[in-house]
Image (cartoon, rainbow, N blue to C red; front, side, top):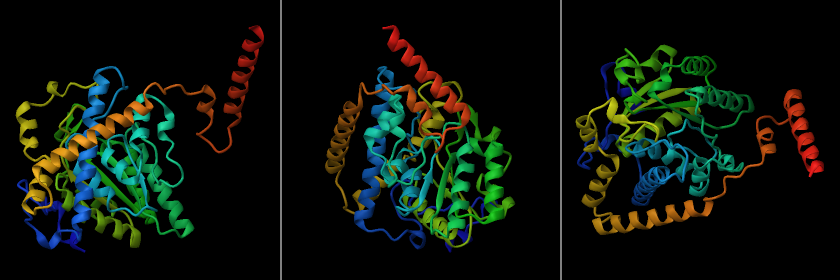
Length: 362
């Protein structure tokens, strides 16, 4: 496996395509058809359309607080594309491209950010856990699913996502340690976007990089150019294969959050415009577009037309869920446990008694 040839202790980074859309490491290029490449591009473009429209809607007061994905499309789409339909994905809250790959409908995505918990109801056919806002808690959930797969003899891989800030949490240590000791089929995909809210990477860790952290737990660690969708896909495919056959592995996708942490954040307070401009030149979508034009897979006019069509589809999806935020209070009790705990059962009965009393009073 070529991931063995890249040593994170030496800052070796897997890259297939440079910033100008040139294939610089053809030996590591994943086996993808032109149709696959166009699917990757369309999904990245769709993710950006959702992102830009969601930001605009939030500023208009038509969505709740929203977490931007701008600049991280290649990391999300490339990693998600490496999974089988039967594999699990366990997100944090900034995995828009992966959600699309796994089949979370745009309407449902908007429904979640609109404040309706039914947005998290995917149906059993989509092996995707809901958004996890508590930092890194989802990593332990992912290891639990991996452990269950081992017990059941299932051929499932579980890919769990976190930002680099999550690696400072105890949950990260516990999840990786448990996964390595019990050899669970987990891929830990860390999107190193350089800022955990306002805290830069330099204040997050003294490690050479995030990928080296894996070595201390006895699992492979891979550093990949997170703005190169081909490199991410290649590394993710190998990591998924390794997890399925051998045990856990960690991928660090070296990328950058070009937008705010959330719509409640003002990134100008903690980073410079010059730094943002530097990363804008590494834009993962622009990089892939340069490749597509060089390979005569798409023209500028076709890209523009696709973008406009996707933006219209996204806006139509939002309008279909607008004004649907009402959720019955009973639903608060419905989806935490298969069987209600005695305390929750008592609370539900108290609420139902209150409703009955209020109805009689009328």
